[in-house]
Image (tube, rainbow, N blue to C red; front, top):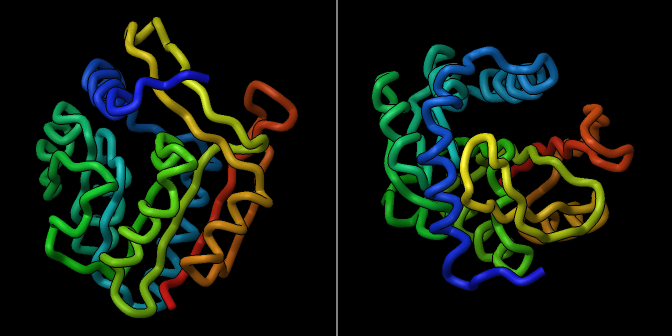
Length: 211
């Protein structure tokens, strides 16, 4: 796979700008996605956490869910159009990627990232995890959920939405566990078969704690 270095983030931004209207129209989540979000929210409430940062918030429906459950939420997304969708839902939101979280000059009790860090190349993932760790309060919680199975990196098109390719990094359970355990205490790691395109195409649902 040849990826234009320096261009993949711009492609992600352009693609999601194109898809923002479609994403905003889809407020109903798949049952399994709602379940993993609900379970993380239950843990947040059990531990009396108060603040949450959502990475790659998209249209903002998850951020709005956490707000409605009593949390103070900040949402970020690389797409300016997605940020507009968040702002329309009265979410404090900023056009920002995961590489510069320290620029928020804030710390949070929780960080939530579902199907967004799969746009981070394997070579960059450690640096992004360090950035996430840096904005968590002590004993803070980090939820990471994303599709995986095999260790791959490639660009894909969804021409029904846009002619812009998106970069994806997928991780095996072994690889993902190894790198996450270098920076966080992994307290729950579930690999789910969510009946996607291939038998070995799964969803990794991971809850971690800053130590």
